[in-house]
Amino acid sequence: MAESLLFSSAESLLGKLASAALQEASLAFGVHRHLQHIKETMELIRGVLLDAEKKNPQSSALSEWLTQIKRVFSDAEDIVDDFECEALRKHVVNTYGSCSRKVRRFFSSSNPFVYRLRMAHHIQDINTRLAKLAAQRSMFGLQVIHQDTRVVHVREMTHSHVNPSNVIGREDDKQEIIKLLLKDDHGQSLSVIPIVGMGGLGKTTLAKLVFNDATINACFPLRMWVCVSNDFELRNVLIKILNSAPNPNRENFNNFETE
Image (cartoon, one colour):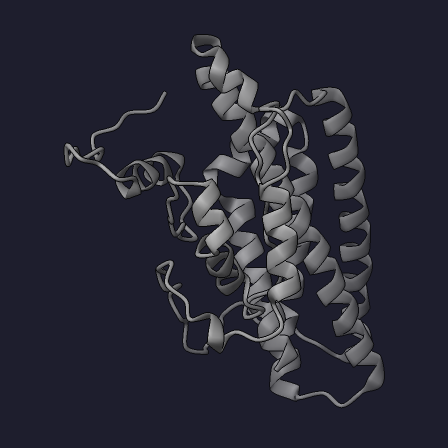
């Protein structure tokens, strides 16, 4: 059901908004209060989605309301993913940029003031839309349910293998991402290409298709596949990346330290 997908999307977004990394970054960028408003309103909407699922509504007005929620959730996820990428970029540049000019060259220099204004504008738009949708829930007699009694599925760790013959309709998307990866920017920036969307749309499968493409294999002799769990922690991600690289000395990086 659509409500189940929306509830899962809300759970995923709330997990990201509550992460320590995003909390710290939001304080640094001066948008912590606005992101907290998004989190609080989403928690309210998440509760009524469970009630909507129990009622199995046929109302066209309620269906349109749920469609609007789907749109704003998708936009909110795009913003959170953008914010996470920028926060990670800033962390790497601040940590390693002063000791390595090569690392600094990999990252594009963005204007923090312009970025903060742009993000604040987008976040305010999401807040306004979410608040309006939350206020409308009383029109449908929906009650807040704080506990989900459904079976909870833990996110499965993925591998990079995929059978292209089993995948239909993703060739255009794959080629578009490959085009971005092969774009020559003369070493001015390190590309981060997020694939965003609601759960079940095939984002991981698309990433696998790109990862295993013959052109990508030829252009990138060193490729590393790392699956990041919902419990995101920068040190663990870096360790996974280092351990997944070909390592003739069989060195283990589990004791790797970050500042």
